[in-house]
Image (cartoon, rainbow, N blue to C red; front, side, top):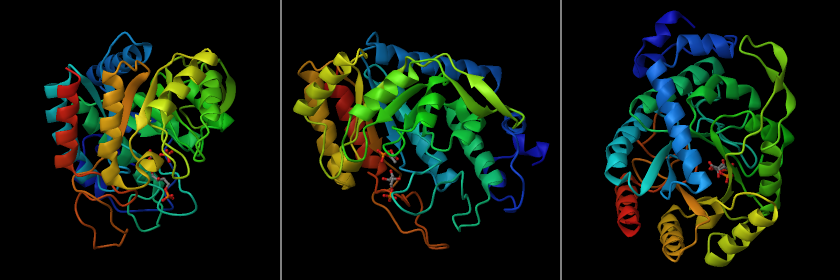
Length: 354
Ligand SMILES: O=C[C@H](O)[C@H](O)COP(=O)(O)O
Ligand SMILES: C=C(OP(=O)(O)O)C(=O)O
């Protein structure tokens, strides 16, 4: 990596020659190549604080984590970010929009693992470029004024990106992992723990309690050397209901049961509903139905509902990952809502919450 990368526009970064054998930069090197300006750092701090206020119940707005299931084309993601950044101030009295910039994908078995792993989408695995492109995209999204959300999957990858993150997901497949709980305990961003793929919310509650606790754990420092990391514990966590094994868990009886379980575990009763995944029974169009149900619960006085997640891209649906035949702005992982539907849903959600 050369210092020109910092100044390189996204397109140039994207078209750098792939070199899979290239050693990875250290987190410190990448951060120096693609730094945060003091203004960006202050903006991210304010975004995190706003999210913490929602999770604490002091800010009554709904936190909405919305965007593509995965980023495979940073140009299309930026186009999406421009649209979201235009919409956000129009509804900011009711909704705090945070963009999904998911660059790692957990897979049920095998499949493309995301931009950070394979930015050329061809299995060549140029992770040095994947990290740079991911960080560059997150910087661009931040510059547009949008808070960035991502799933942290590979703990080694966190130090390359964590300074840019306003909200972090620990996914359904890793919520039970001690490594991810330790990682969450040292983050400044709020963390949403998904219920397990089978639907168990208990593991997410355990995760929230573990993450709130200080830990000492194995980590890499910014020079890439093994080190002991001491964390302070992260009190800004939330349960994310995503359904399990085809069975939704967003309806009033599930939310009430989850609220009671949070209270019984001594945790702040604040949760997010993921309108996609098993809650939509893997049919992206059902996300609207889930969102409307959740809004109804909010209007009926359910204070535990502090957030929503939507999977949305420029265009509806999904497509197979076939080199040279990709349609612009269509997901290559889970099917997404298209932009028009997303905008309409968010505008009407804001109107209902007025
Ligand atoms: O959110 C995306 C997917 O649901 C998750 O990464 C699992 O994907 P897979 O079941 O297609 O592997
Ligand atoms: C993988 C995701 O979700 P889950 O962990 O709920 O499957 C996701 O939100 O992209």
